[in-house]
Image (tube, rainbow, N blue to C red; front, side):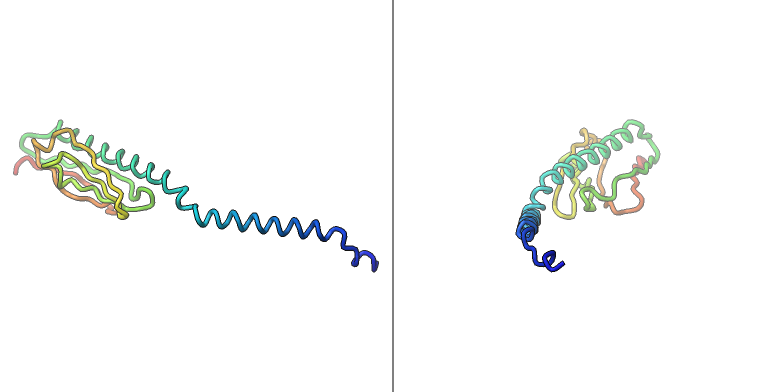
Length: 146
């Protein structure tokens, strides 16, 4: 039994395995801490840009559809749904530039933004307003009696 506890032949192999494992784990943790954000930033930017384009196109289509069925002397209202966050951030849809530039502007809280054209309809009817994605109800309305 005394020889069992004093035999040190396998200790060096085990210690070598433990030391190399700790070194590689430390290396991978340091690499992830240093470059993890950089590796995920590019794909996130692409996803946010594509999602903003999709939402802007949906809003443009909604305004175009409303314009096509617009009554001469009446009111039309439409509720719509948009995602509350894109890329983990709330955003704002701004249509105040629609009269001059014919665009919807989508802007996130971190500064990412996209502009989407609205088919020249803003020269015919007044389009303005701002909506936040974090609002509960989203409604677009037009009153041709004014």
